[in-house]
Amino acid sequence: MSDIKHEIAALVSKKVKITDAQALQAVEVVLDFVEKKLPPNIGNKLDAILSGNVDLSDGIGLDDAAGLLGGLLGDKK
Image (cartoon, rainbow, N blue to C red):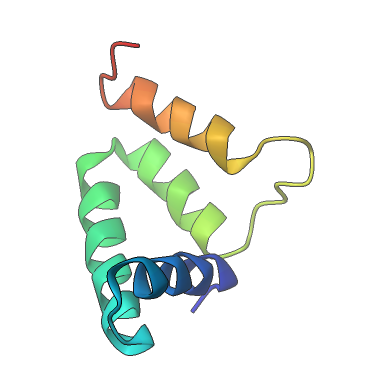
């Protein structure tokens, strides 16, 4: 399991006051759902990022990634 998924689960656990195991399970369900809704080439990239196989140190942060996903999913900002 990637560190990113654990980081997200820790945030969820703290925010909604559930156990770490419950939060991790919820994160996995949501990410699986999102990955299946994305086009295959984008879903594979998301999987690579979450698996820690993509170096994000080149300046793209979570805000940038969220913006990109929002655009892909039809966010009309």
